[in-house]
Length: 162
Image (cartoon, rainbow, N blue to C red; front, side, top):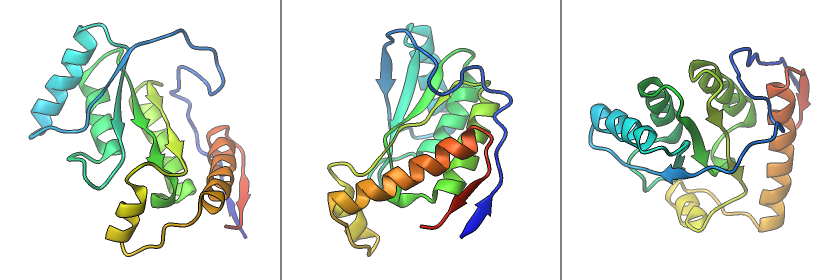
């Protein structure tokens, strides 16, 4: 077992669980350059959308977390988020640190979406040379990860065993 110390999200404008109004967003996953990506984020914001999300997967051009940091830096009010990260691809302690960092750098505009798998997850696991476990196993790992993420992002010290 390992004790993990809390992370600060002091820059966060909204806390998990706070009510949110109905919104419209855009899913985007590609750009040929940093400027094209920043321009796309600014366009999404100027068109009145509230959120830009990026999917997770090996077949997409951009990696979600760095791309979201760039989108947040290029905009003023646009919320940025992950369109369901694959839990098994990331350690929850490292993801909590990355999420807290993105939330601070974006002024509280980051939204984290995470799940137990997606339609291409089995093929992507094979590409990585990894087994694709049953839904029950993946959901159990997701539940453990969510407990770690929620605890760390709430400023608690957590104990992880998995």
